[in-house]
Length: 82
View (tube, one colour):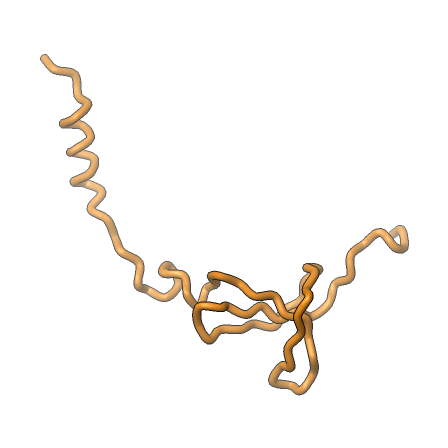
């Protein structure tokens, strides 16, 4: 491996701004902020707008659509007239 061409791979905290959800993982992302984590160490902080803590698919608050009714409506509207 060539030296000096790879980004730094380090622990980073990702924090969801819309709910109280944070995760410590490893990443190469650049971060301007820092945060003191539960273990007492300071890590770079990346703020997110949405994560698995607030996304409707993962929280179970997703709305299911009636796809059968939509297909019938489409076929009725765009079917060839006899």
